[in-house]
Amino acid sequence: MLEGFNVNAEAVRDYMRHGDPLQIVELCHHHEHNWSLFKARGALMFENDALEQHLAEIPHNRPIVVFSEDPGEEISSRAAKMLLNHGWSDIHKLAGGFDAYLEAGLPVEPVS
View (tube, helix red, strand yellow):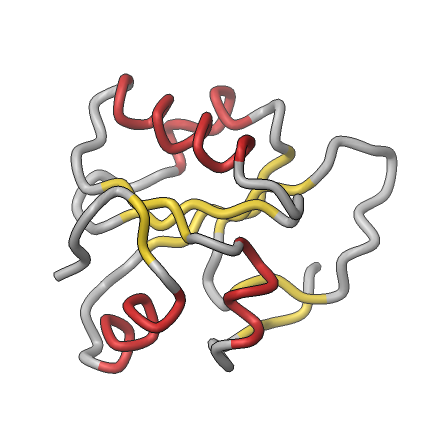
């Protein structure tokens, strides 16, 4: 079980190693083309200003880990709080964002 609103990449890695279902929501910058080559494996990737338009795609039956490619954590904090306000209860913000995810050696896949 993931504990607390803020989680670190090691806690996410340990959770994933147990095979428990987890949904990652990755937020990217709004621009004409996404230059990211990789995303977290299985992540739902949305533009940071369009999350509310995609709420129906986010499951309610598993923990949700939110992070942003943005070096600050304001965008992911705001998104996680919005999900809490819309009825999700098991929401966590990944401290350090995508950089921390990568540094922990967590799985990635190409952005399609």
